[in-house]
Length: 497
Image 1 (cartoon, rainbow, N blue to C red):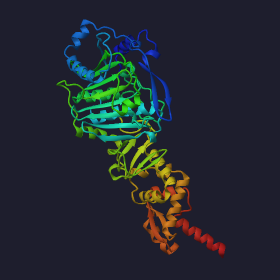
Image 2: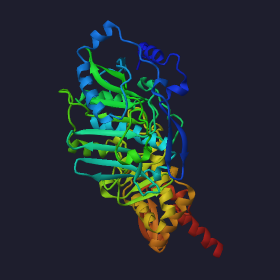
Image 3: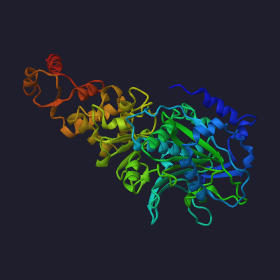
Image 4: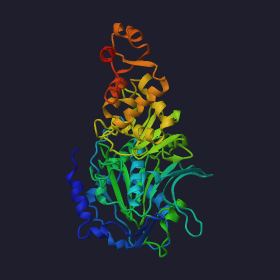
């Protein structure tokens, strides 16, 4: 997709004569305590930001018919962001075209859009606070006027609750809020392809499109999307004759509060600050063109992740360094990457008997699968391999049952080629043990005549094996065809004679 040159011109104009260090935000990270996951921020004056250039008369004429909705949303957001402070100057607005056709990703719905926002929210927390994926635990609460999902961290000396971020659904207004503490949003975020996550395998995103695509899809479906970040309010919407996506950016009118609060305390209390945090609001404002989000829709959106304790997290799961084996029946047939649902799991030719959450990998651009072509089969293999080694008495029989009785499922795809020899050897030993060495295994491709010779030649009961399991065992065990067994018996008879 072509990026409009005007966007680069606008961004560069907004940043003129401002150093990179200053641009990164009114707060900069001063210290990070890995033991308590505490993030300390140091205050920087709001005027460290670039001054927005004034709009021309033509700009205002173009925006006249489209900014009333944004103005009302801004007023609503202002009421929530109001802190003690003074009005500095009347802020000016600046409109930036994002450069996405309104028909782009036509098959995506609002659950797909929420997936993009959730993935960005989660990736930011993992990266900023250097969390291991198994340390990222979300907890759901149902309160009188809201639902909340928080990322708790250790309590302080007073025993107060603390958190690294939150998601909130307001029951009265039908709005959804996603907040990241101590983070800033650069203007380059509006450029398609801008990302800082390329080289981190622990993070799911890498294409630099999520925020823009989410704003497009939500706007297309009638939901207002706005952000509060970096002393600015960002309002997305479809504007003009061709309903193209634009972002109207307005500098905040408030100076920073004199007393700084601990960010982790604010996050636990579901509070955010425009000068310190990144906050995404869906359905904000009282404008007539903005739809409230129903509780049913919100809970449907939450099904894109399995991270949420007390809501979407599986009760029966085997965690491994390579990912998670999901044993709960409601997760059977579903694939997740970094806790986020892969839509392709519901459309694959080969279905899965169990569910899987991959710990490594990147989403493909269409979000349907992984970037690596063999990524799914190999990731499933790695999860089973680790799980069997960790819990052999329980899980090895389940895996062998898949190999024997469900040869077409995706759970064992390419197992004969991908499994390590040590795991293959465990499977062979298990089969010998459970059959008491009284069965003669043969391939499903064996002729009827050869099968008929098994009892006469070996005195054992014939047991048919699917092709994948047969090939798997042939590479590590003395398993033989009927003809090979006859030749071996004849050779032994000659030696004895």
